[in-house]
Amino acid sequence: MVKGMVADIQRASIHDGPGLRTTVFLKGCPLRCLWCHNPECISFNRETLYYPDKCIHCGRCEEGCFAGARVVCGAEMTPEEVMQQLLLDRDYYQNGGGVTLSGGEPMAQPEFAFALLDLLKNENIHTAAETSLYLYSDEVMKKLDLLMADLKIWDDETHKAYTGVSNKTIKENFIRADELGVPIIVRTPVVPGIEQGIPDISEFAKGLKHSVKYELLPYHPLGVTKQIALGEKPMRFDIPSREKMKELSKYAYIR
Ligand code: SF4
Ligand code: SF4
Image (cartoon, rainbow, N blue to C red; front, side, top):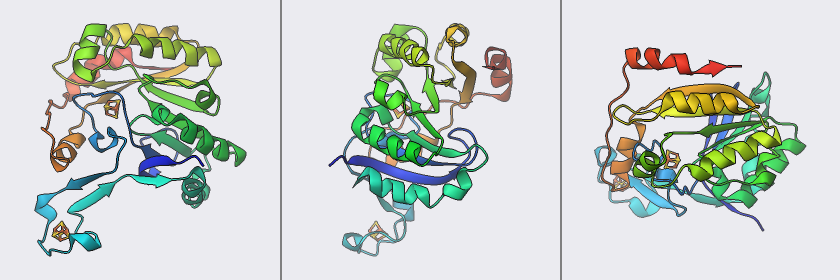
């Protein structure tokens, strides 16, 4: 039986694709982006996040923490179990909404992702995925109505330095996805202090026949608190200024 390691199921999201969506966050990612906003989704294993400022020292950790100080991330679920939860929000998927697979890297659990997307397509629910495209599955791609994929840094050496992996495979996988004809939103998280090559990425995105949009997303230090809660060394970057985002907006587009 196929099972997936699910980090979270977030309802009523307006940031993970068109319309009102439910987002399924899967655990496991082969990248190590220094600015990662979901560090609790990098490991494939179940983990505990501890927020000391919320702890009331009740000494009842064994029973589960009701103060939100100790949060377990990761539950093994079948696609059918996840689907049961997703169908509760079905009415909200009208008007262009649907379900988005995110993470972590949804392509890192391809059998589970395929099985869940298959169930969603059988119910005529719009499907999307947020991915780094470092991993690729034709079967998963064919079940998607929309692909939201990052090209974070153009230069390969810089990409390796900040994400831990080469971007050659990622660029190749963009081409493969484009050949399948799936509509693609190309995205770059804007992280001040890193030479990301945004003009080159914009040109690359324009060259894809099925890219519908190039989006620039300002870095947000969401992951820092979670890195600390995981016992990791936090990595802090500056938030890009409005002026910087405005200056870069000439490279973004909608087709
Ligand atoms: S159950 Fe939660 S609040 Fe109580 S001691 Fe454990 S972590 Fe702290
Ligand atoms: S690809 Fe996403 S989940 Fe993976 S390390 Fe980078 S920001 Fe985090």
